[in-house]
Image 1 (cartoon, rainbow, N blue to C red):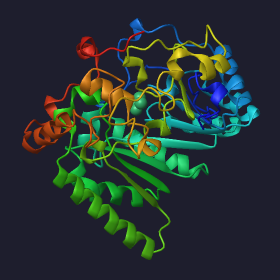
Image 2: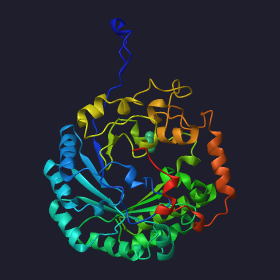
Image 3: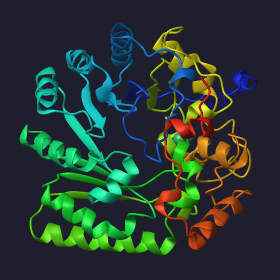
Length: 387
Ligand code: FES
């Protein structure tokens, strides 16, 4: 709430700051796959050294003291960190609800058992497609699909709920029925059918990945039909369908507002209010230099887009600003060159034309999967995040 007291009239209103309830630990940028929609940088050498186990322990401890309750271990591929079970154990001791977000590549029954013993609550495995050929092509690995299937079954066999994430795009979304059938056959409990979001490599490949409106509408209709049918059959699987905001007229409330509840710590300790913020021309603090308390409450980066004072028109006077917070800062930066602009997804944005153009490009695009730019060493010069 902004004060209206007359003696405070000259003091700029300070936004109320919530707790960092959701902590995302991006343990590493290393990954054996080369997905063309990955949001992470490839030039590992340009990033700082990865945090040590002790440094992560300190981050986890500080986060918990500040009220963080949910902890995600992600990457890159978090399984490449040899200390993952140790980190899980520490997180459990501190009282976090822990979630491992993985491609399943590098997972073994032995590791699943070790993570369970360490107290891991939840494992989410991501798939690229419903059949081996497309999946492995997108992942850039010949054995990825079989390994994922085996690990998904194993995760369930060890008493975890089976949580699957399928990234959909114009090359696999027409097979949504096969994807759902596969999930049913695997006895999945939760399935996220998420159209890829356009950050990092996905933005580079946007023309080759963005589905058409017709593709999306068909996929959503089929998902709704399956949802109704499976529920009638008593199947408890939850199907969650996530559309790209490129087909919306109002922007998403990205991160539920900048610096409101979400805190990411990247492999080299840079702290970010969202996974995409590293590309912004904003100075972000590092956990090696500052306490998490300072970072969350006092750092420039975390305060840069908090509240409403930073907003330009049309957001500033919009009666929906408390609902969508002006949309996504990273998307505004990528699409307009200025992170403080209204997210162009919004129909009221003066730059909404870039979204209309992207839709039209998707409608007329003809490129095949083979023309996507994959996240691999050959293409590393095409995309970086500032270190
Ligand atoms: Fe950074 Fe949306 S991803 S604000």
